[in-house]
Image 1 (cartoon, each protein chain N blue to C red):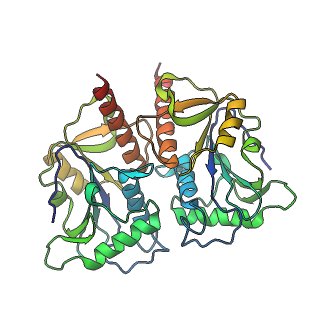
Image 2: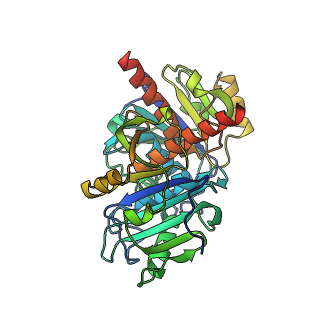
Image 3: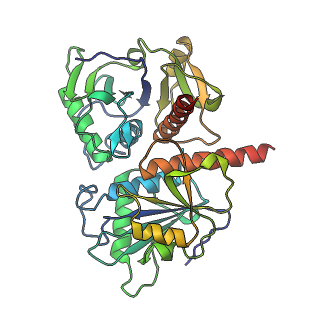
Length: 206
Length: 206
């Protein structure tokens, strides 16, 4: 078992307000019967895929709040991932396996290589996180910031609830914006990666 | 029938080297039996979706080269699109309908609102295009450029063939780069939109 590591990593936490916590959903009905699990699948794609490669320096937490079982965290660890393809159906199959194999006693289980599942919620995912950034249209322009082991928090189509905004505020999260338009969570992850890629490249050239 | 319009539009052309041209594929096998149609579906998502809205100022051409039928162009027109959801399966269903309804005599057919299909290839899609930009890692940094009615050309997992690179060169296409990493086509569209959004916003504030 590999515990969470935030050092030299890019971390993303995505809240699925209606995403199912039981494996009894149809792969043909991700937006409907699975509570917009399609959005979370696309966030997995955005977080990890390069052209013909995987981003090894990324950890992604999905927070599934949609019931019927208690809240679930699924953690994806880039440098241990295997069998991950970029299409929604493949990613949903791996999430289904994770939900099927989760322990009832709260222990974290590695359901397939690099994918870990346990009962839990936002504050469990953020335990040990360094700098917490809440991606939000009203935030500070991401281009004006320097990051150290950032953890970016995003919501699905319903955003982040007031309760969760309260948790983020108490943890000292800063709001950051990636542009003037309101975008899907998976699109925000792509743009965030791009800004960090450019920053890293510029630093390596100086 | 609404003809192509490039004025004040953002235009994207995506080449699907193996994407099927017949509707006889399984919605459960987009990466396999449909010739990586999953990539093209994600490009449709990236080109059009805002949070709870559609980008009306976008036209997207998919060029399907994978047989068994002759080459096909599917054109998506933002300000006429209806029934478009962001998940791959929904988008693939609309592409399947387009392929099912295409005319054998080369005429362009509106298969569902805002989606047009005809036999054709890259040079047909680029007829009448203004400034053609070929998204490529070795290109000029996109941040250093100003665009007027741009048409961005991208390839799927196999990129752009030498034959098609020759066509682009003869049409005077410029290579532009969006960052230091090699990315999936759908991710490139997201980043391109973000740069254009920021440019437009900056201009509106000055």
